[in-house]
Picture (cartoon, rainbow, N blue to C red):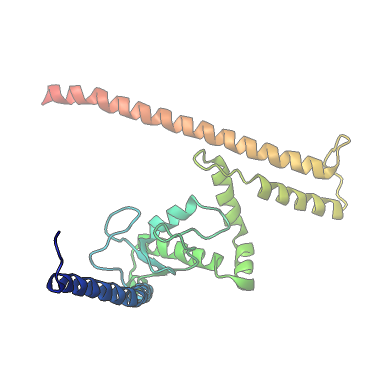
Length: 249
């Protein structure tokens, strides 16, 4: 029978005590480490939002190229002005687009300060579109007035969206509400130049709105097919020209 001496037990007890103390220290320090990490993240976000120029070693996260007409969202991320506006074109018509990086709503785009002194036509056009975007989503009564002022622009975007076969939103609800509003105006003005055929004027406007949506989608499908045919013809022409070019060479 083996007998364990005190000298053999003491090192093991001391080692266990040291390990327990280390674990306790880690538990005490871990909340502090989490707090420091959160503060560091907040500080980095604030620095990013306050930056007036894009990072030198960064690229546009949409086109993956160097920034052209760089604009910063209110979230702090930088994009090419044309890229983020085109990204918005595939979003809802009357709402700001979401940042592709952090999914926050971009209610304001801030162009790089040096762009305001540039005179190139392309830069001016992008800056004009950025200003229009900012006016639409400034918020409050001013934003509502700007949306009313830009109503033709929003209606045009909605029509293009309904024709785009890549966009699933057909705006049935919005168009039918607009049709109901127009039928109310028609009734209040006591007009009587639309033949109703026994139907209520609200029903006529509603059917007209649905028919318009379907017609626009059919037009969009036709345009997409025509475009695909043109692309195929161009590709076939290029393929036929390559052997002739090789023979001449």
